[in-house]
Length: 312
Image (cartoon, rainbow, N blue to C red):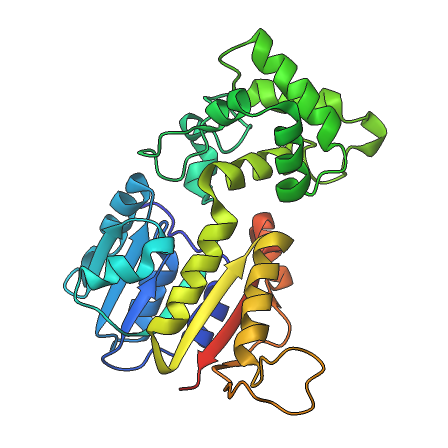
């Protein structure tokens, strides 16, 4: 029997979720359903679990994993940026809890045909949802060197974005079918050797940037979080796992704004907005994986969990 997949921050997610009897819980980034399976096993009173994923292959894996709980589980193909609409189709207007686990999954990274990684050469795709029209290769070909530079600098936080963008455009012009391996080699050569990071392949940040751009991930996170807050009932919890600073910054800033009582412009002597505090943040600092988990699963090193509870 194959070993059971254990997702990052597994125990921490289960502890913080505190699912209430009869509630609807949403796993907005279902993946291989590791978190969802654990929640269903621990909280037997969950009324219904909705699993959402834009990756059809991931949904099929999750269907097998969650088979023992199929009477409670509904799987939906879609992007969490359309959370309200997806749930409305199921007759759901309120939820008791929701979790997000942003980024790319291990099965996606390991599949060369998906184009997310460069351990094995494959097509430069990077679409979370393969029904989307634009691949990473399409994006590289369509954008100017300046536009590509901006994406790599902003979404990859890459200091050598200009050199990389220029080299990638030249490589794509020479080879119209630029692959993941070709892209990784191009970035490797574009960054001076003395600036190659110790623990990361030099192309990691560029791959991250292109993936974010192809899937419009940061805007999707903002839209998904905002809808999640509106759907949560009082006492319901929102859990979000991020893997890099761009994702985590969005979660942190949303939580900070929602926890404020006053949203008046700075400088007013008294509050006139009538605002109220909408959430209580339960994790003043992000929760990181324990040393034992990082040893077992090095990719968990960058994972960070933030949790908030809806007040009213």
